Image (cartoon, rainbow, N blue to C red; front, side, top):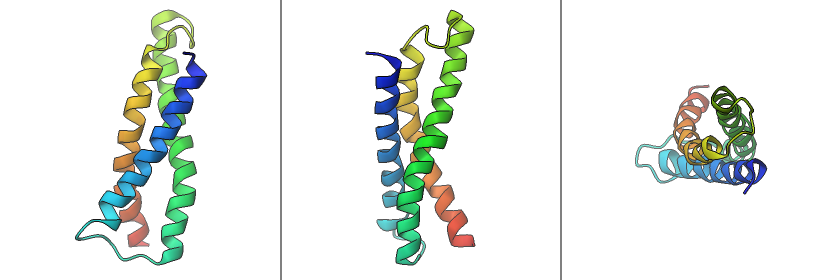
Length: 106
């Protein structure tokens, strides 16, 4: 397995983490905020891309730096990128909470 394949998997799981966070913190929550349907659509569509690019890409860049520091090359090992595929969805899940709070406060 190569780094591109691992990052593709991490991106897909990050999107799943984003949707799970939206569902947990708003749609199925007993104290969820009341937002209009177009706001939900915006959070789903824009948030999906933003979470994948910002969180997934940020974690991949972070672990590329760690890999470079340890092996001398950013693509020297796949190990840290695999951890990124595990950590990115968790960050996206909890980021949904803060994005919902921000959007509800506007």
